[in-house]
Amino acid sequence: MDVQDWLVLLAILVCLALSFFFSGSETALTAFSRARMLRMEKAGNSNAGIVNRLLDARERLIGGVLLGNNAVNVAASSLATGLMLTWFGNVGIVYAMVAMTVIVVVFTEVLPKTIAIKAPDRVALIVARPIRWVVWLLGPLLIAIEKFVRLLLASFGLRIDEHMPILSAREELRGAVDLLHRNGSVEKHDRDMVGGVLDLRELEVSDVMIHRTEMITVCADDPPEDVVKAILGLPVTRIPLWSRRPDNFVGILHVRDLLVAVQEAGGHLSKIDVVSLARPPWFVPTVRPLTEQLKAFRRRKTPLALVVDEYGEVMGLVTLEDILEEIVGDITDERDTHLPGLWPQPDGSVHVDGSIPIRDLNRAMDWNLPDETATTIAGLVIHEARSIPDVGQTFTFYGFRFGVLLKDRNRITSLRITPLTPAMGG
Image (tube, rainbow, N blue to C red; front, top):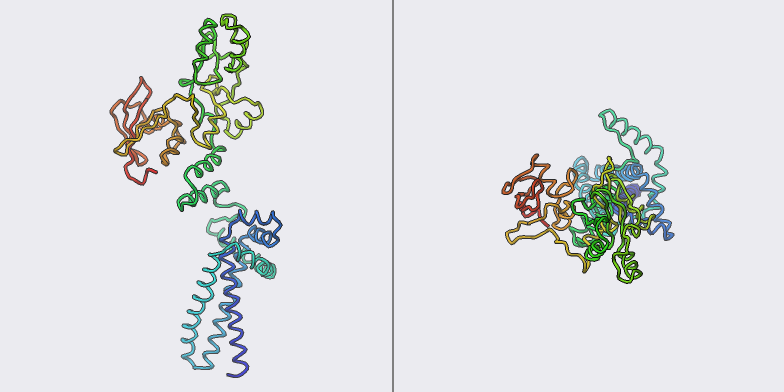
């Protein structure tokens, strides 16, 4: 081989090395952890800041890497073809094609990408500065290519906005947590807590409130002795008081205030005026988002509010505990006496109280029943049946069989739910 052949061979090796670099960079800069890189940037890592800035112009970054990679691959193949023609004649074209295919696929595609995918964060930090220079040098050409691609897509009715991601940040986070849960890195309880936090913005007070038919209230018009005894026998610490009619609430009484009054009255319960001890009721609309209601609870420093509809009618009550349970799950203490409303059966079916919220059932059983059209499981059955079913009727939808077990007038009180496939369960 003469000097010219050695120079060509050296140029081919340089192009292959650059192809190795561009392939590994492409994989690392699309597979690194954005959250970890942001933390590293805040900690003062300048390379992490460069990586984050590159990702802000994602189309230009990918365009620069692909353009550089294809350019050096074409150059290497062209030089190798010329060299083989010189050495072997026309058959050298075949030799060059076979040799370059193997070398490019194995050594400049699979190998660097495998290395990068094993440690994307570390590789991204290493290649950040040189890739920034590549993107800067190719900037004008990349801008022209971007505009051409956008015009081409627009001609087919596809408009691309680089600042409009396909998934929202919340959905990306939810998807990442679900993936980690399936891989065993995140427990179900932790996944549910993250999902509960993300769902708060989408939920309204009406989705978590205690319905008025299940509210614990006391009539303030009864004799003081009866009122005090009734309140002290209840499993809650804050009780709505009503007067004259059940929907006319005159205050919210705290048991602590009542106990102080009993002590001051020397045990003479007839001397206690419970209405004067109660605090003014706080009314909130059913459509208020849970995030706003949570902030309102913090501002007013009170954990209970009565919920009213658009006509001012009381529909139920909401507590701070109800919102927290959307995040951490069911909260119970030694005074809670209500039934859980969920009874798994040996045959794989589940007996549920008709009033159990769909969200609670989904969380407990790891199901995915829709909760957009109804809040409770009984409401979902009525919505899908388009009628109020009778005891013994069964319905099949969303991959489950629903059977009505008990009914109180027009209200479904108990249901049997059977998953039709094992995959529908947890």
